[in-house]
Image 1 (cartoon, one colour):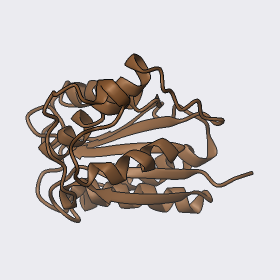
Image 2: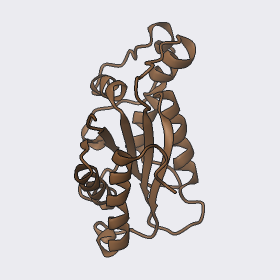
Image 3: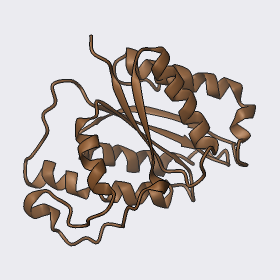
Length: 198
């Protein structure tokens, strides 16, 4: 049985903020279950916005030469992906959205050029989100955005882990039940199967 590798993209502009604390607990659960993970902080990467030039529709490659070029092969090689972001105005952060928009090249490969990766194992992706407020619909926009991004990357959607009401930096530490749930979420990604959010 081979090790499940989980690639985690954190779109929080705050290092060691609530989203990252939640992610650290997920990573602990992944490790405890025998998996491996890699955390990539998008705020530390130079990722320019998509310019809508259509260049990726020709050969499946993005014309912009920045840090995103190093991330494409990581996405292609991953078995599991987590996209994590705090909620800004009912959506993902600018850092997360720039990353997602630059996955247009992967959409072009899949849907225009028919260059699907055809993996030998199921590829599943997840969303992790933290919101300062407790609105019933506060995560809806972000979840839809991530679902469509994962589809472009050729991953099925396995569910989400979301936490409401954590505002100030580090506030999520006062939610021990959510941190424990995050560890279980990480373990379930390795041990299961696909949908771990139910």
